[in-house]
Amino acid sequence: MKGQSVGYIRVSSVEQNEIRQLAGVDLDMQFVDKITGSVKSRPELDKLLNHVRSGDTVHVHDISRLARNVSHLLEFVELLTKKGVSVKFHQEGLHFTSDQNPIQDLMLTVIGAISAFERTCIKQRQYEGIQIAKAAGKYKGRQSTINKSAILDCLRDGLSFRKTAEKINVSLSTVQRTAKLA
Image (cartoon, rainbow, N blue to C red; front, top):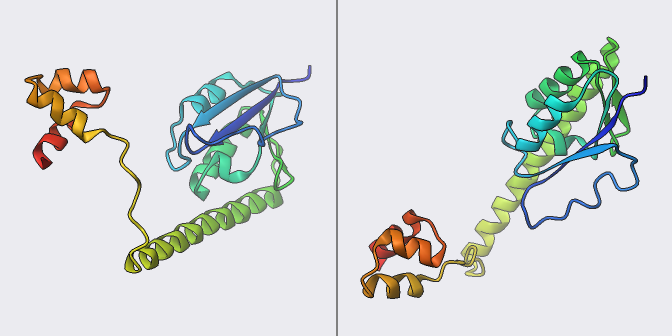
């Protein structure tokens, strides 16, 4: 009996678009996480791991979508292949099955290490660029999305911190922090 084709898609934030991942791949079901890949436990990935059965194939756009470090990558792939589930990484053109294959294991480790190294290099270049921009006075950081004056107005009108937080739709700690800095 042929198993299901199950897709795993991950983007780092809610604002990002996941449409390009696994475009054109015929899937029976897909799981989409909108969360950083640096955390091991992700809601939709956890659902996928509980859903798949022997004979299924998990499709992932590229290695970095499944894991950001080699140990997590190896753990996820081993967990799936031990269940009889194959894992296919489309960008890298790799397909891992439950068959014992030392070359397959070597390729996964090497490509996973390269992917983690590449991510570290990107973060380092980003950090260096920010430091240069800060020194030149061009980097101000992320713009605040919190309306501090509205919070302060509510507090001046006598609303409690908790009521202000509910009214402005922010956390209690945001109200407390804004009041403290005012």
